[in-house]
Length: 94
Figure (cartoon, rainbow, N blue to C red):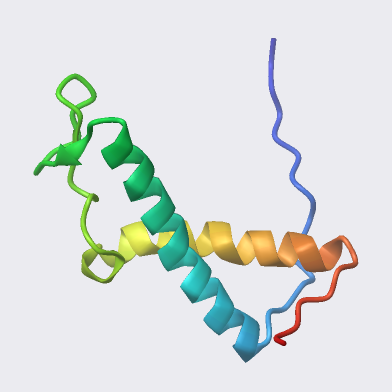
């Protein structure tokens, strides 16, 4: 079976500066949720990822991650916000 990903096209959605700030906060939270889940599964920090002994070099605070790792979470967060907006929802602060 061949799978062809077909996400919603969000290329026309621009995030405001306020939503860019939200996206960065979401990116940090995405990392925190991922790390908490890994720790709950018995993973620990290690200089290299090892599935057999459950170590991962990204089990560190978001602020200490290399930019390339932060960019992964940033992309996910920004695309999630863009998806919400493309679906017709509004995002506003109370």
